[in-house]
Length: 188
Image: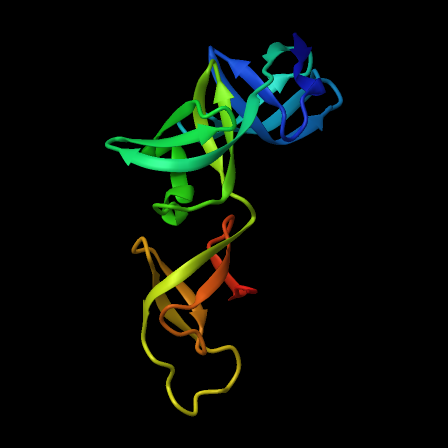
């Protein structure tokens, strides 16, 4: 058990049997009142975010989450199946993938990180930079070279991303998996 004032950003705490990650923690001590901790929390199971105020000496259980490296294997409706290093299947529901789902494709070889709570995979994190192929994009407008000109490109899995005007169909591009932004052409 830890007191509320011992929790920092990134720590995971158990509140009413649910795992909550601390996004922001701020200690406040006013003149006549007790010390309090203002926290912004995210539920790891539902993804909901809330702001709460706790007394500085309130006690909570700290949770240590297990993390393992996995690779994507296949889609078995409604689950996405990943394999860990010992070839054990790790099943993750689509709603637990969030924005990661936009970049999952058949045959991808990216090594991801799975987070487990109570023996169940609750999230998958992709590498920061991923490489995907452009399935379709409009040709660049001739003569349009002023500033940073962007256009929409559709990836192999159907997800659309803004890319530079010089990108063509079939090219491999680098994407920041955290923001979904185009970074540049993939280095061969």
